[in-house]
Image (cartoon, rainbow, N blue to C red; front, side, top):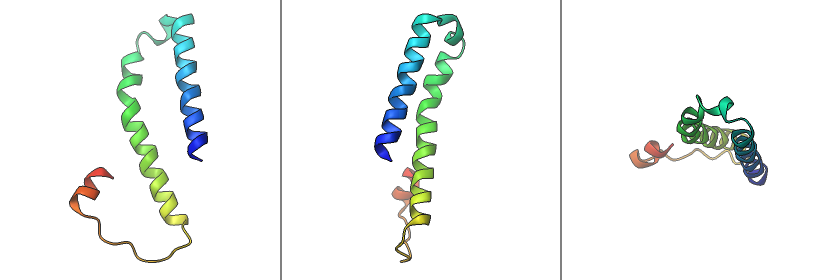
Length: 74
């Protein structure tokens, strides 16, 4: 699954780079938005992946209470 996400990310970056070279007018207005939203979107997908993994895990042991530092990184 991690390999698929990495390949998808590389394909997206490659597509955007080619699009920027071939038709820069398309991305000129939204380029800063794309770069600025990349980290929050990646964080959202990371959080969703962790939650789905936690809910689908076979182990039904109760999770410990996260520390404030762990809560801040989630």
